[in-house]
Image (cartoon, rainbow, N blue to C red; front, side):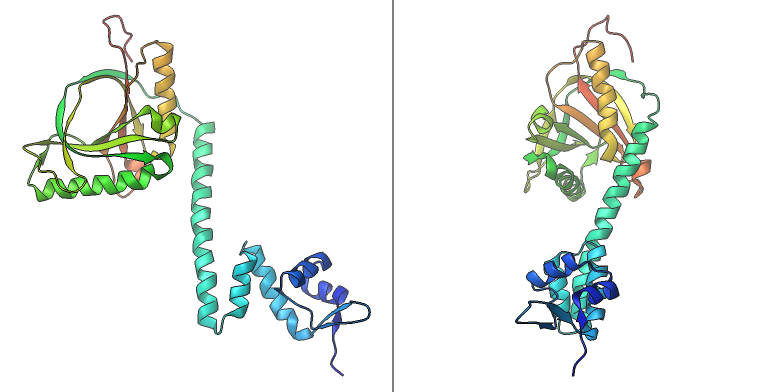
Length: 275
């Protein structure tokens, strides 16, 4: 006669609650070895204990039940490993995002004194540019791709940059999560349109400028300081926000070494207080 464990004994052996075992049975993840047709009692075989232990550890890693089923149904160790490896990659990405959010929060709590603000008159500037209507959630990958395309086009057309690359960002991007964005590289010489790349005369502007050091993940703190400054001095006007990438990934792979100048459009008058 084959020996089996009651659901209570199986629960004690696997550290899975009876409620959890009932759920796993209902969803077809771990079905009992036997079910008494008269009483409905469930019985598990000793050889199901290792399977339950695997399920428990996979659930500790937040692997969805559907993917656990795929692991258990995999024909060999390689296929099982691929499913698990894919999930581990997702966990590592999530962990990196969590660590970044924690560090950003710590930076916010120990916020240093705000960087100085300067007023700057920016003349019009010929440039090579890429412009598009972008969802805010897609802004960073779009920005990276557009800048890479611009730098490649500058080299291909034999043009000489005359300043750091920059960006123009419409207020709707921040207010409505969708709006017009432009990245540009100031250049000297005629620009031949190709693909998304075309010529642009970056308009003149009066700007309040603050310098952001480090990755752009926490640039909102610097934007906040600049916005508060323009409100305090009652000089903010409508217009796209600007960024100038003085030091970026082309100069250093370490984001902590990047330098970005952020410009806020302002009304400039002789009595405007200096930064």
